[in-house]
Image (tube, rainbow, N blue to C red; front, side):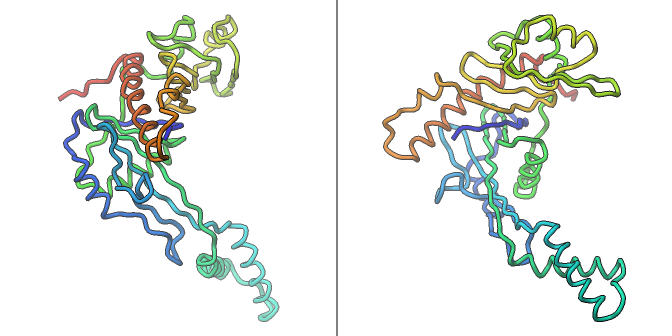
Length: 301
C-alpha cells in the first residue's frame, strides 16, 4: 500500500471525528454497481476486501471511493444513430432533422447503455486525524475533487480547507534552482520543467539531467518559471513537486521499504506494514515541505 500521488488538504488538528462516526456516515453511501441506465456509480468501498470502510493502522486511517463507469464510446452511438437515420430516410424519403437526430442519438444511447461494459477503480484517501491531514492518491485535482465532493455528500460536517503556504511552490522552486540550494533535508534531483510567462508559453523540460548548471539559471533569468521539480527528502522519499503544490511520482525509497518484514505471514500483514510505514513518512515529510514553502498561511480571525 504505497501512494503514487498526493493531493493534500487541511483538516483541523486533532480532528474530532471518530473512526466509528466516520464509518457510520460513509456507510450511508456504500458503493453499488451501476444500474442498467446508470452511466456511472460512486460510493465507499472497504480499502481491504471484506474489511471496514475505515481501515485503521497506528492512528492513521485509510478509506476508498469506488467509481464505476459504463463504457459507451460516442463513436458507437453516432454510428448506430447514423445507420438508423439512413433507414429512416429510405422509408420516408427525407433525412431526419437536427432535433430528430438529437432524439435519435439519445434513444440509441439509452438502448445501448445496459449492454455496455463497465470499468471500476478505487481512489484511496489517507487521513491523519491527529495532525489534521487528508491526502488523496490522485494524479490530478479533478479526480481529487470527485473524492472531496463524495465526502461532502456523506459527512454531516466536513471542515476541510486548502493547504495554503506563505510562499508559492513556483517562487520557492525558482529560488532553489537559482541558488542550486535545496531547503534543509531536501535534495534537488534531475527532473524539472520550466515555462515562460510570456504569451509564447515557451517551455523546456529536463529529464535525468543535472540542474545545477548555468543553463538553468539562464532560463530563469529569461523569465521562465519552474512548474515541476523532482526532489528527495531525507534520502527516504522522492517526489515531483508541481506549481500547484501537488506531490506526484511519489516513491518511498529502499531504506523505507526494507523495513517491511519480508517474513510477514499474510498479504494483510504486508498491507498494514506498508501503510504504517508510508503514514509515518508522510507525517514527517509534510511538515518539512510546508516549512520549506515558508510555513502555513495564518488566516485572520
